[in-house]
Length: 281
Image (cartoon, rainbow, N blue to C red; front, side, top):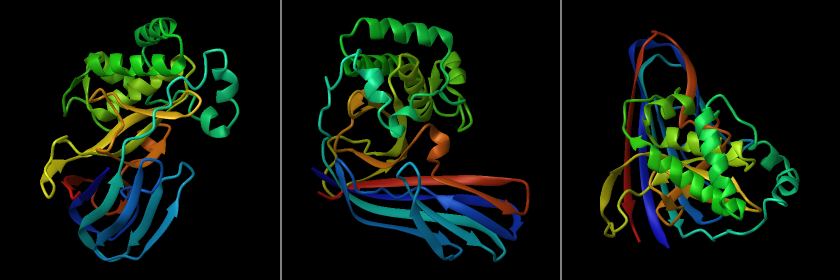
């Protein structure tokens, strides 16, 4: 088990004065399987009252409005989380049992349909089906598919954006964790395996010393259903372990963006982001 502190600062600088803004943030983790939140807090500047709730997908959401004129919106989320390796759920159901198991609950059914972000290109569908045919169980096939997707894409920032689709990233064979996750989800859904998008953080240094602070970033990975939810990080080709801190689940990125909102003011704004991660135990 590791104890990880995360400081995530983000926000917008506007070209002029904004008279009002209405926002929601998904930046704070929740306790669940594999992690326990010891402390979490979201600081908003300019100062604003907040309302917090857990959304339909189980993600903690902070909503706030700023009605005073401002030229910058800044959010700083700090969290202290104890994280441990997740339990292995391989071999839970067979291919024959999967359709009935996946139809048993709404949470699985909702993660079986493609979205505009996850719709895979035809050649990836063919590839995923061939991999599935070579593996005796959905769990084994799912990990092989995600590994294949992760190996096929080169991690390159700036080639794609938050609005890029899986098909666009596949055409470039380049992208970031969001793109690789969307492709993995799309490929899994194409072979009948429900899959969902996970947002969170990854400590980038496996052997970090206690007290050492490193530069990090928001991260995304895949969970698939094969009798139980099982996670895998296709960007780094590793299982979900004690360096991953989960913030939220969704059908794709649009269900779990760190910040989303509207404002009244100038048409242009500049996003800024910084993440610091410290292993404390």
